[in-house]
Amino acid sequence: MHNIDLRKIYKFHPVDPAPSPSNLPTAGDLYYECTECKVIVSSVPRIKIACTCGNLSGVDGKLVVQKPEQVKVVRGKLK
Ligand SMILES: [Zn+2]
Image (cartoon, rainbow, N blue to C red; front, side, top):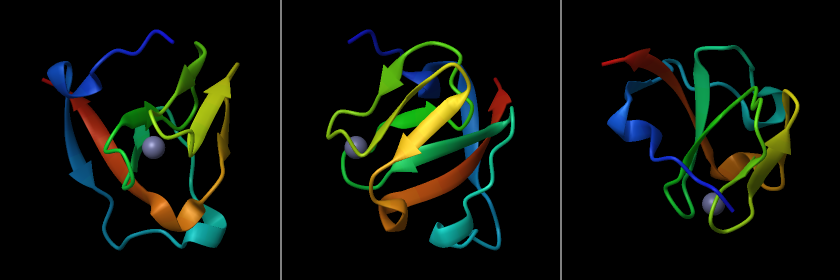
């Protein structure tokens, strides 16, 4: 699996108030941090991605979340 550490490119701030796990928002500037393995992935992944523990995986703009309660939604800004 090819993973880029997005923290090197973006500054992340938690979305406040935190969105409900049952209705996670998606947008080009929104990213999900897996609270299990701390990996950050895009909420609309264009390339094939997955977090280390397998909670988050996706491709072609569609992210699959296994455990939504273990997701922190963050907004990314280019450094
Ligand atoms: Zn994970």
